[in-house]
Length: 372
Ligand SMILES: NC(=O)c1ccc[n+]([C@@H]2O[C@H](COP(=O)([O-])OP(=O)(O)OC[C@H]3O[C@@H](n4cnc5c(N)ncnc54)[C@H](O)[C@@H]3O)[C@@H](O)[C@H]2O)c1
Ligand SMILES: [Zn+2]
Image 1 (cartoon, protein in one colour):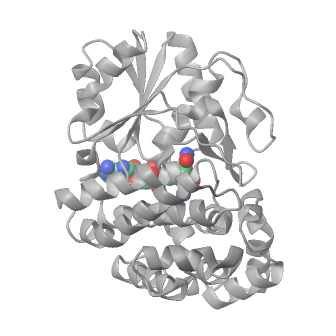
Image 2: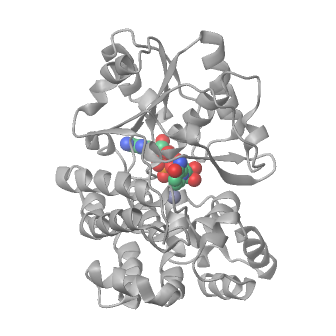
């Protein structure tokens, strides 16, 4: 088996590392940055405090970002960077803020809209601004991935753009920033971590380094997500979930995500189910489907993670969703036949083809019928 592993992001992890923006920017020989912030931190004043603490290194804030950010938000952010002549970008927030900043930092030397690169396969221009990523969810792992997921709400398209440009120069991972997540956001972003770990492991593009990262991260989620949801100030649980998140990010960015992420895109677009919760909805189903793939390597993984079998791992995923209050079906949506057909059709996203077992329309029909 031939494989390759790269991870170009400098990672600083620990309580208080959010204060290291100035040092990180100095290392990059940068002088004037834009803070791209989740609106939650604009409202609670942390964004402003971070600008003050940067002692002049950060010169402004861009906070117009929605969950599942729109291509137009990335374009507006790029416009601000262009007009003000910033030479780096710092992003504070969950995957939405980080992904918006990644896209903006990549198109700000051009007059292009990010639409030109969204689901088109067109390569982004090489020149881009360096990014310092400061995640506040545990989470997407976007701080170490080469992925930016944007939505074009105008045409209903949500899709990842993949580019080497998107690797941040620095990831400052400060578990304290996740304390303010409400239990519901903790649960949804936390199950996303488990999806990244398992999907990175069973993806057709799997490889040994990512396998090891996936196992470590998977064990952490089962040990700590329930605790973090129950008590948001449980420092150990928050720290371990932040660790699980960044490590799962490294576990999937090269192998790529698979069927649960492919199915999440229509669930989020059409029914506004948050990203992680939408991915987690089908994770146990695909764990059972994928159990027999590639000589049962998922069976071995499940045993190493402390379960009797892949089937028991799937049961534990369902139990974790129940414990953390995540949705386990779609019954409240009262979906009809044509809506199920639409879900099946839009689930046929490119990521589906990274799944180790071929996912047929019949399987998707059966799965959505069971969930509905
Ligand atoms: N780039 C990648 O590698 C990658 C991987 C997976 C998913 N994604 C994408 O990332 C997005 C989801 O990101 P996310 O799950 O981190 O959620 P998010 O960034 O959309 O945030 C979810 C909600 O939580 C709030 N929030 C964030 N941090 C908070 C905190 N510490 N305290 C209180 N509230 C907080 C936000 O304001 C928002 O309302 C989706 O678009 C998804 O497709 C990207
Ligand atoms: Zn995800």
